[in-house]
Length: 161
Image: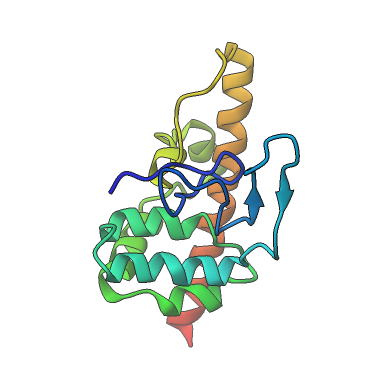
């Protein structure tokens, strides 16, 4: 099933005709009065739903890893990682073990579109200048590094315990 994407949080909508996102709560039924309904889902709940999608066969282990990484932070890694099924955990460990270790390596590390891993739209509505693209890529790289370092710290602490 190829569902529409929320224009506010980039998650899949319940259907192609949906005008409210169950993830972020944004409601655009009336385009002149866009509102947020309810509380957005917290990152641990989001990860649990992604794991459920994996277990129901909607995503592969690799796709689930990249979707779950979007939820990871140093404060919640210890709550999210233990929830992962074995195949997803193996894929996550493999990804984390292959990330750069030094600042110089991170500077040259290219993320081949984190957005595509998360099921988000890659096409921009406007043409980016080289400077805008470089700034966006630097921000994505820094965010990805932040998440990978949180996971490395989690795995290091869980192995020493």
